[in-house]
Length: 307
Image (spheres, rainbow, N blue to C red):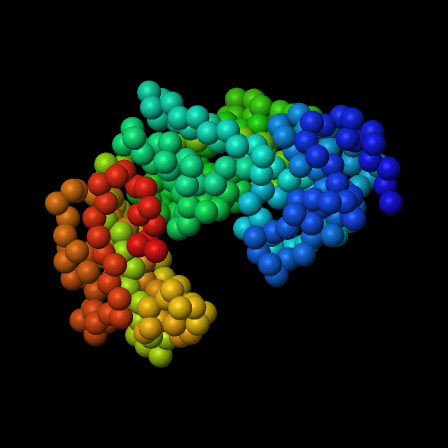
């Protein structure tokens, strides 16, 4: 067991070792298939805590892992130090420059809500419940990708703690190679504590999803390929094959079924109609289980593939 008194004296957030009250909650991932087993867990209260934790680990030759919301937990952290950045919850919007400063613990819902009153939106993904920073530094192919591309390409700057425990401000002019690498390299180049991102104008959008039975997946996928080639840049789509759980809150036709979910969002002219997009679908796949197409006039809030 490591003696962590010296680490605890360097940080303002909590420090836990296995057996401590709070340890299990600190390391728990949203993805329940992943079970972390670090030697030490640090609940960073600010960027300085992150730097102290990484520096402490580096001095002892310990590996470091990072987690905020836990949605991206695909590999368990075994041994070493797990730094939890969920307390870094800064969100500030500058409507004049169309930018937002976002802390590593912030989920997209808060950024969406903060930007919407100005008719602006972040380049978030299909769920507002995931971490904005982890999503963005992983690339970020989201709801407006056809029009604006990857979210990572709209990062203006970031603060990152590198493996030597140094906190660095990084942008196209300061540490440009690191700036290039981390936008898509996710956590491999350090722990990002905050990012400054572009916001884009979104006054009106339409979004929806159509469910098809899994048995017709081949027909839908072939139709989807042809359909997407005919759509304008203002329309972004995705398709997924899902095995839905038998939960009572799901509609009866979908409960416990394998389905194909076709999702689309249109952020073009306000007078667009459902037929403008859906009429381009081949006739053989227009029959739908469930149609959730609807307009949104609240500059993005809750319009996430109609889900």
